[in-house]
Structures are given as structure tokens and as C-alpha cells.
Length: 169
Image 1: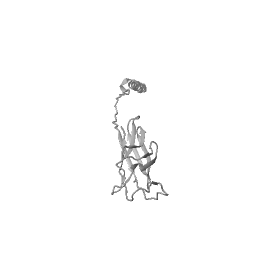
Image 2: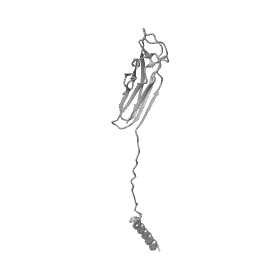
Image 3: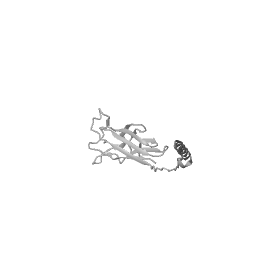
Image 4: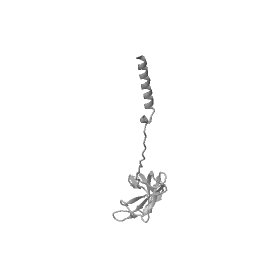
């Protein structure tokens, strides 16, 4: 009986080796490819915060008046890597009072900080460059306006609308 038990154990061992070494228990694999796509369109956003206001000053001692605060300018654009993004400003007219007294718009100038931004002089005839960049990204700058002060100005409260345009192909 011992011989039969050992024979049975050996037979089971051989059967297990044969079963686990055949392709019946071999791991099967399969692969599949999936294509991921994303649509990315051109976009542009312009954010300007602040106001342009000039306090009265004596032209004898203050020949150029700085605006009371600077404008914070943020340009966001998504475009091609070699495409040009531009920011311009144009004045709607000269600075005028309700009585139509005039300060010529070219007396309004600006300086600016930030890469790609440009200094300039306001115009009502043609849009003036405030900045230019290549490719996508976010650009930040601070634009500070100045007004030439003069004894020749009539008294009153002057205003003008400045229209900014951001272009990104």
C-alpha cells in the first residue's frame, strides 16, 4: 500500500507538471491603440485695471503731470508660435471740456514697464503700439500716462476715450 501511495503521489506530480507547462495555462495578451485629439483655437484676452486722472498743477513748477495711478495691463493670447500679438490704443478725439475747450491729444504720452511693451504718444488719427509679442503667453505691464502742462489751457474738466485693441491671429 505504501508503494501505491507513492505511485499515486508521483503520478499526481507528473500530471501537475504536464498541465502547468502546456499552453493551456499560458498568459494571453492583446493590445489596442486609441487616438487622443484636442481642438485648440486662437484666443485673446485683455485686462486693464486702473484709471487715468490728472490733478491740477502749476505749469511753472510741474511741466509734465503724472497720472494719479498707473494702469495694470494683462495680455493673454493663444496663437501660433510665430504669430505676432499686438496691443494698440487710439484716442477718440482730443481732450475736451463740455464747453469744447481743447488740449491736443499729442500732449498725452505714456511710459510702460514689462517685456514687449512700448512707450508712446496718444493719437486720434492712428492706433499707437502699446506692445508686441510673438507666440502664445501671458504678458503683464504697467502703463503710466503723463500730460504736458501749459499756461495756455482753458480751465475746466477735460476727458477723452482711449480705445485699446488686442490682436492675435
